[in-house]
Image (cartoon, rainbow, N blue to C red):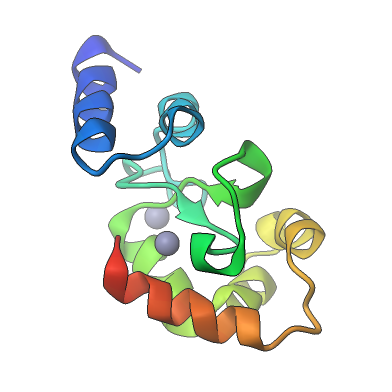
Length: 112
Ligand SMILES: [Zn+2]
Ligand SMILES: [Zn+2]
């Protein structure tokens, strides 16, 4: 994690009014947890629209490709595909609530 990246993240978070905790997570985990490419923005496991917060337990560091995949397939399918995330996602989401997957998709249209 170099200064240029740190500043780019800080600038982006300021521009989009992301919280300090969101910025802190992104700074701490700047690489995609699936493939190791640069994380282009942490993903909310439980969307903010569904009451999710910006704490580390609710965020996943993902690159554009895997972030898009998470939104496209839904967080439940994503958890099943990438088992390394399963426990974290299951701990945050009630998998009985199918609605949380739908809201996740709606949220993707509003922000990255
Ligand atoms: Zn990736
Ligand atoms: Zn997302």
